[in-house]
Every structure is written in C-alpha cells, then in structure tokens.
Image (cartoon, rainbow, N blue to C red; front, side):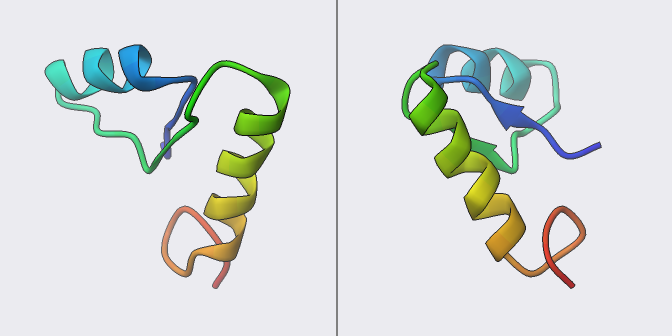
Length: 50
C-alpha cells in the first residue's frame, strides 16, 4: 500500500526496510500531514488521483 511518512525519520526507516514512502510530511504536525495527503490526492498514479 501507499505510505505517507509522518516525517523524515519515518521516511528513512521505511526506506531502510524496502518500503519507500510515496510522500513525506515535513514534520509530524496536522498541517504537514494534510499537505502530504493533498499531494497524494493531487498526484496522478496508483496512489493518488486517476
């Protein structure tokens, strides 16, 4: 499944185990997480809009 990492540390950890995130929130705040969700929804591909 598509992964939205909750910050750079989570992104690094997921990459280390072979699960690269489709998007990375700049920080674990509500605003940055929403920005990541918006990015995924606005980006064509299997993780976002068709």
